[in-house]
Figure: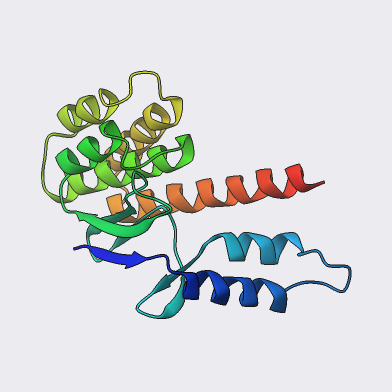
Length: 174
C-alpha cells in the first residue's frame, strides 16, 4: 500500500488559507488548533489528520519520513520484520514514533504467531540505544504475556505516547 501526493504550490496556498481561518483576533493560534494544524495532510484532494505511525485493519502504516517534505508516501507493513527494517533504515524517525512502531511491530508478531522473544530481539537490534523502542517492546511483551489483546495493547501504548507528546508541546508553549 503506497500513496504519494506531491506538495504543490496549490496545497501550500490552501494550507495558508486554513491557517488564516484559525487565527485568533491577536494573530496567534491556540495550542489545540496548532496541534491539529501540524497533523494535517492533503490526500486525494482532501485534508486529513494523520500520524507518523498507526495501525489500520491489521496493517501498520507509517509515513516514509525519509522523503518528507517533498513527497508524502504512506507505507504498509504486515510483519514485524518489515517494521524492524523501517526502524533501522530511518523510514520512521523520532523516539516516540519509533517506540510506537516497535509496539505495533510486536502486535504484528503476536498476530502472526511469531516467536515473541525473537521478534523482541530483532526489533531491539534495530537501534541499540533507543530507550523508547526498548520500553515499547518490553511493554508489549509484558501485556501479551498477561493475556491482553496485542492490538488493544499497541493502540493503548500509541494513544499514551500521543497524549504525552501533546502535553509536552502544551507545556513548551507556556
